Length: 194
Ligand code: 5GP
Image (cartoon, rainbow, N blue to C red):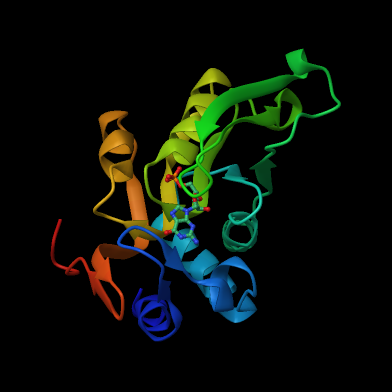
């Protein structure tokens, strides 16, 4: 998505060879029109597949899942990272080790909002090691729901996330695929590359 690549080039801060900060338009302050456009693009990529729900993980996936849900005219559900006060048996849970914080936490989704009748699109802001998305895929499978695929806003293609998801048989679509980055320079995967 060219408009997204341009914004990453203009405003992205490369904190190291593996961490990109996009707080001015995606992760802290949010460009609402861009978020809606991202949602429309996910809607276009996954149109006509009978998706009933968009799934994400709090907090930074929420605005994109909402935008995709608006485009697909379905609800979105976000997995929670904190222990819920609800009974554990009412929740699907999976462990996730955070790439940016290095800690392991449980993600959980209520059994009320995901089940065998659902066809799910998973959306998140970044695909890095894939841990967060593998956790959500595990939950979708545990719930007996169908998975249409995963939509990521930014993929760091030099990390292992895509490979892990594809090994699990998951279709992955990223709107900006970074092949390498160094301070002052971001390279994207060529649009003709596989
Ligand atoms: P994972 O390693 O599980 O694929 O990434 C999990 C989460 O870490 C992403 O959803 C995102 O919130 C955060 N993350 C991973 N890499 C980056 C990065 O380079 N920049 C920012 N801002 N967040 C990241």
